[in-house]
Image 1 (cartoon, rainbow, N blue to C red):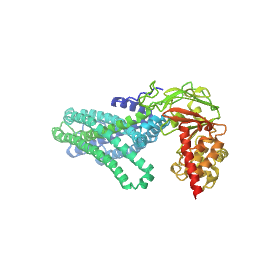
Image 2 (cartoon, rainbow, N blue to C red; image 1 turned 30 degrees about the vertical axis):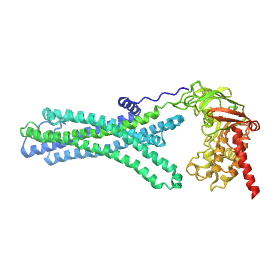
Image 3 (cartoon, rainbow, N blue to C red; image 1 turned 30 degrees about the horizontal axis):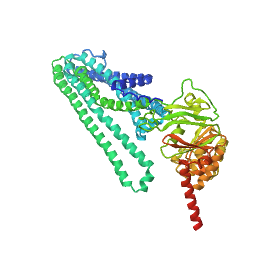
Length: 627
């Protein structure tokens, strides 16, 4: 198995193209939103024109000046009383205002439905789906805080690209074009004079965009660290309290929180300076308008209402859109940083997956064979020497297990026990060699079929915040209550379940912390048994429980392993001697193999472990005799 290359870092241009492709999936909603904005733009200009026309009409009636043409080409009836004409114009403006209010509401609903109910939900689902299919290597390389932040905050940052960057940019572009054309139609010279500062605005925005992006990237990193600190603090609260480290823990979180605050304050400070600077430049345009535009009106070259007043409104709207550049630039940087982190997950290689022509095998017999299997964690390599410069987790392991046999695995920490068991359900694929199930290479089997034929009980079994029945049926949701109860009885869990307030419908707390270690293990065993697997993997299931509970677990195990190929990691003789044969591992290799009776009579690691436990037992007997 060659190590897959890491995904390439996307450039800003590539990110923008990916974001455009993502937006294209929601083009109907985007077109609807843009159409509403175009209608709002047209109605805003119409309302401004009616206002200017009203001012010119009042001036016409008071001063007797010529009314002239208007941009709307609307002819006002001379035979109507002046108040009636003004009432008509006021009524039109009111109707436009009410319609604009209704359309603004429709726009808000539509854009929120598009980004919050569709894009965010779909993208978050895609990220979660990809996380479910990634190998353990990804989760080893990324902290819990980082993954949570990407699924929550970074997905929202991608949403920001659609509604606060793309949509706003399109609306801004159309609006600026319409305003510019309208202003040029009123007075080309005044338009050029008022917009002389626009190139400066564009340059300032581009410069600011480049400067602010690294600060947003740093802020994301600090936020991840803060979330990770919080997650570790909650998960390790018992350790914190046990060692009386509450004050130090608070100080650690405060430092992480303060770092986020300082970084965010720096960003706000820069944005807060940039926005007023842009605003000041747009105010310069209004100064030019009042000076030069007023002179044009005085010279009779520009009407007061449909000329200067309308131009003033257009310039105000134009300046408002230019002012919005600062917000768009700010949103661009946030969305690009978030998008890069989201796409890192979506582009991460899936190292373990079913082949296109995978063999379907709904039911395995349970025969397992390892042929010259080696496994190296990322960053290490296997050499032809007995020991590479960095030792592999597994080094040329050969093992044959017949269907229905029980194999116990003994070895010190880091000897490769858990790695060996992880190869059977393809948590990892071997670096070299093959793992065969019923004579078929595990990589040729369909992954769903493979894992449905394997039941697993870990040393620390994880239970979900759900009912006991749902936890037992986790791998087999269609199981009937009778099947769930049968599995619980085999795992010796039925009695304590019925003693719970609501029996099988009792909702467990987070991680099943309301149960004892032995109860959690029995529920985990019932969960594995319910799938009726051909192969059962037990990773030291009695390591953290007392002797009395261990005996109860063993009674359940004896029933569970009957007729199933079983691999059990164990260190106690009481567990090891129940196996059909035992393998002893050291530094990734099998150094001893045989039954308990065979190994107890051979010098080696097994005998050493057995002697230590037997000495402890004899000492206990001597103490009891002395008492």
